[in-house]
Structure formats: C-alpha cells, structure tokens
Length: 460
Image (cartoon, rainbow, N blue to C red; front, side):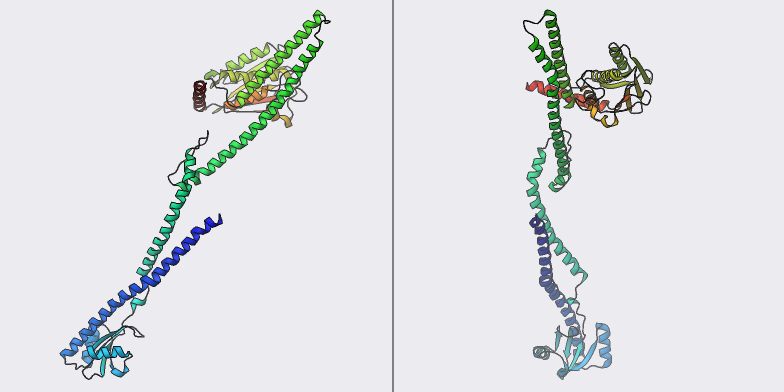
C-alpha cells in the first residue's frame, strides 16, 4: 500500500526535476542565444550608422558630431585609445581589419567600437543593456507550460493505469443486485467506486447483521417450539400409557378427549408458528383494500364478547364514523383480535378501544383495567413465546405468539406498536401507530408480492 502511494509522488517529483533541467539547460541557453543575436544586430546597426557618418566626414569628428550621434542613436559614445580597450587579441585584430566591431562579453554589457584613421582613436558605443541574460515573464510562462506538460503526462498516465486497474471492480458493480440498494453509477471509475463502494459496504454490513439476527431468531424459535411441543406430547404419551384393556370406558373417553385436546393444541401451535414465520420473513402477501377501521373494531369486540360475556367492551372513535384506511383487512382484524382477546383475558371488567385520526396517521389504542405490564418487560412481550410471570402461563392459555404476530402485522403495514400503562383504566395500554399516507408504498409492495408469486408459480 505504501509503495502504491509513494510511486505517484516519486513520478511527479521526477517530472518536475526533468522540467527544470529542460528549462535551465535547453530553453534558457537557446533563448539567450536568440536574444543575444538580436542585441548584437541592434548594436551592429548603430556601429555601422556611426561609421557611415564618420566616413562622410573623412573620420574627422567634433564634440557636436558625437553629441548629435548620441542623441539619434540613444546611446553613450566615448573616446578611447586602442591600448585602453579591454578586448582580447582576436577582437582587436578584427577591429583593425573591419574598422568596427561589436563586443558582447563586456563586464558592463555589450559594446560597439569604431576605429578612426589613425588606428589609435576608438569611439565606443554603450554599454548596452544585457537583457538577454535576465529571466523574463515569458520565461516563467514557458516554465509553467513545461511543468504542465510534464505533470499532465504523468497524471494522465496514472489516470489511465488506475482506470485499467479499477475496471474489474466497475464490472463487478454492474453485477450487484441487492434489493433495497440503489447505486448511482458514474462514467469515471474512480468516482463510480468512491460513491458506490461505501453504499455497498454499508448494505452488506446491514445484510450481515440481519442474517446473524435471523439465525439467532431461528435458533430461538426452534428452541421455543421444541419447548412448547413437550407439554402436549407429554400429555399424549401419558394418556397412551394409561390406555389399556383394564381401563374403564369412561376413563377411556376421558383419555381420548385429553389426546384430542393435545393434538388440537399441537395443531394450533403449528398454525401460529407458521403464521408468525411468514409475517417475520415478509412472505405473507398483503391483500390490500379500503375499509372502515371502526367496522372492524365492532366486529372484533362482538367476537371476543361471545367468549368473555362478563366483560364490558367500549369503542371510542375520532371521527365518530370511523376512518377509511388502505391495508390488509384480515391482518388488521387478526391483530385487533389478539390485542382485544389478550386485554379481555387479563382485565377485571372493562376493555376499551380508541381510534384517533391525526393529520397523517392513525392510532389504535387497546387498554384494560387489569394488572398491567412491568416496565422492564414491555419490549420483551413482543418476542415469540414470551409470557409474563404473573399472568401469562399455561393456565391462561396461548403459546406466547399473539403479540409477536401483532407486531409482525404492524411492521408489514409500516407501523409501530408499543406498550405502556393505561392512565384511564390503570391497566395495560397497547398503541398501534399506522401512517395514513402509505397507499402508494403498500400498493407497490403488493405489486412486488404479486410478481414474486407469479415467478414462484412459473418456476414450480
């Protein structure tokens, strides 16, 4: 990993060093030579002009002539002897042969020289500015351009290398198909992976967590089912052991009835477990329709009152005529039956159902005047096969799946359920909170379930 990080840094450093060497050893000497030739041509022009003027005067000059030449040529002109010139031998020889000379290696800058007829008097022009040895603004622009080319070549090469290296990963993203995962694909591989890989990892972690939780739930469910099966099977085994030829007829009928009761209990338990599993795994298809929740509450109270004739059932609705909701009527009715039956079983005399409509939700409250629920167990009572110590036992009936099934039904309708104390009746209060504005999402879920069922039917 460190090597992969250091490699681009080293390549960029090398690219910048190469750009500097090209600038210093190639560009600067080349531009200096060009600028030097231009300056030399300018000086040579001035020298020839001065030589021409002197030749017209037969190389006789006066201060007025020199002053006029300085003004027109815009440079200083000094009078020196040949021996005073700071020139090398070759330059002095060239000066005598050609009568004029441009010398570029002066200490103060380039100069021009014209020798007169006496071969001793020399007129010196300059020194001229040596701008060709200076770094100009254009040179910095050239340097920036060279750096841009060098670094751009490295960056583009690294980009192409990364694109090729990341291509298998982008191909792998094309094959990703997780329900509930939406990837925003990008054309550039780096952007594609940087934006989608975190989503993919988060989704995989979520699936892993759900998978572990599902395994734990299945393990707990199997242990609980095995535990629940023991009691009716033990009663059947006990009845079979007592069923022999010496048993009286009345005793046989009693043992038969006990075995039938145990079988009915096993059958009921199996149906409850299968129903809970389908709700837990989301396999129960929703039969969605519009219905009045108050009508369902009336029917539920009528059914439960037939069993608990000594209890009073009250229904309060706001609005009073009830409310049309879009849901699975059978599942909502089953959830209400479980809650009302549970409240009637542990109440003293009264069970109350309250239907309250809010701006975007519906609350269904079921409360009783029984002993209530301890605060520490209000979350656990929605777990399968959970019974409260003081009320939920085998004498009161039930396998401990009723509230778990209610929670599964509420979850399928994108709602919530919780338990608390009833301030009105001083018993237990269960509240179901269901969003009203969910018709569209549930309709889409219904279509998805229908498509899934058709695919399963086609495969079978």
